Image (cartoon, rainbow, N blue to C red):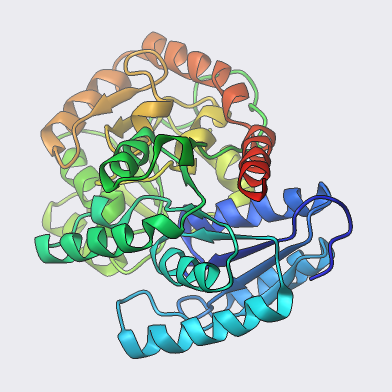
Length: 370
């Protein structure tokens, strides 16, 4: 892994090529390569085989080496041992200056391999696994595993203040914790204007985390249409739920929305609902800000770091359909408030640019490299 300049060569490791973590890596790595870093990505296509055909050409154009590394999300001692062996061999071949891991599985294996090779490892959890909805035993296991590899972590990049607090509770020294929220390269769209539809938009994976089922329950108490943009394992269940609630004629399942079209599509709606049960630092909030469309979101993960309740959006408790109903109804009936929220949210975007995120990440690399 030759270094074309004095900037460190970085091997990124990621198991989960989906959602916001995938977008984070897809936007961060080309920026690092453009700034003179030698960049490589080791990842698994187990969960999304088709992505290999999309990602490989895009990264090749940027000079980013892509290495397939079979990994599985679930804890599996035998499979994890095989993945660790392959990863160690890859590290010996590439000889990077820094390893940067993303999310739980890659974070655990990458830090073990980095320690064995005496390389500094930067880890970005993108929401610690024990912060998500799961059983008590599973959360305890995840905390234990994170504590085991904490000493091998040269720096931890927390995308939310919630992660900062969790890292401190795990015993990470404060000087090794760096709060770097996600950044976007989407410039603000045209000034907020009356939407063509007096309707609610939802953008996200159709899974329990994103809370589309809560939105359906809220819509059942309102007289409004909702447009669901996304795909996922809960698609059929959500369609069935909309029929049980007798709102099927008001719920429109639009399928996935290409990232390049998200901001423009959001502008079709009066507001965007983000009813997540847990989050890291969701890009959907920044996309809505760029679109100039007001949001109602849950107070989870990094959302309250970005959204000032009552000023740049409306925040409600997680898993609370009545509160979601009340907030959506109030905002739909108050166009001046919607306009004020959207205008204020667009003014916050300069603090959440991709360039800022990359600048701060490079500073972390400089600290761990010494």
